[in-house]
Image (cartoon, rainbow, N blue to C red):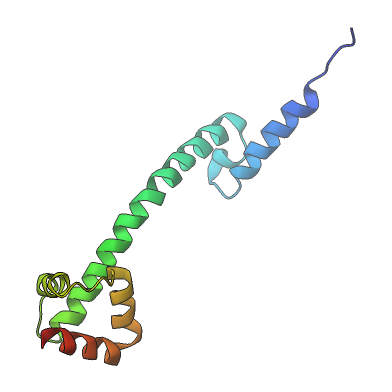
Length: 115
């Protein structure tokens, strides 16, 4: 049976990992052991924060809506209550985009709601 040499696979694996660690500071960018730890930890943070981003964005939309609605003499909780009572299914993302990008349309929408 012929001998299998694994040097190229070993080097490729190390180079790929060091490529993932490109841009890190100090030894984490060029020493394999430290780069491996850094890449694993970065992957954990990336996985966690992909989920946390959704919560953060929802909080941002609610904050924007609250500010925009208070300028028109209403509270965010009142807005949500009237929308549920009138069975309007616009989500917070769409409403906050409307408040930021089209304030006139948003004002008309709120005035129509409060009637």
